Length: 386
Image (cartoon, rainbow, N blue to C red; front, side):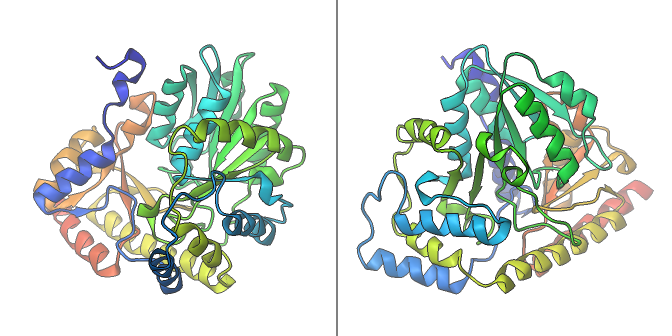
């Protein structure tokens, strides 16, 4: 009975692999959620708000404190002058992306994005009845070919969906790459939607560059982020979108009929947390970089080809050296064989062959969990030698 355009999107790999990990008792390095809670002040503020009666519908656009805090965050970290009235609070970044695509795209329109991509992108574009135009990010650098990007644009391009830092590859687009994307968007009069949920998780001295900071792009860019990754509260599902008033109003028109509102007691708590000192944000990146290195070193020792991770929670590997050509087959058997769960990159691609032998692992876990996972994965080296 499901409509044809959604038949390829009946389940998510995250749900499937997390269920498999639970059933087998495997360490779940498949789904990108931390196994520790966020800042104590954030948690205590939320609890106080619940007990203080902030449990009914918040304003449809979000509580004023959080909208102002998001605007100040953009000024503080990126020098952007954002009017709080052009900030819309959403049920996570996923809803913000869905509302933007549904508001701005319809049948006959095309959306340019990069593959591999977060799986909700393809599903949301299908919901809108639009066509996905995916540009390949290839190892080892996971950069894109400028000519392939140019060829993806057409007179029907309505929107460009950019994710940086990028899930699942861990790449961080630099200013030159983003400038080219912006130039092509302007040339084709397309709206740019940026998914920046990993904005504070960038490593090795690299910098996150929001597209809205580039010359001429603020007027056509919707910037999306959320609290879940930054503050280790992925289950709260509170995000935001900001940009030109006309575009934000279009997103709001759709968003109000998706969830209407959510997170009443969480929103004021998040507003306060966004003002945490710089040491919190730098400490977050430093700690995750160390975890990245712990897991990456263990994966290399186990025989994986490990690609550089510039940002996010994730390390992408190639399993060919372990005797596998199909990452999906590898991931479905790994929990029972080794006791670790991961996800195949091919499920994030319009062209499955692009990521056929690639597998993604999440490192946003406690050290002892990563150490145990590395210990279990070491058995793969023995299998290969045998």
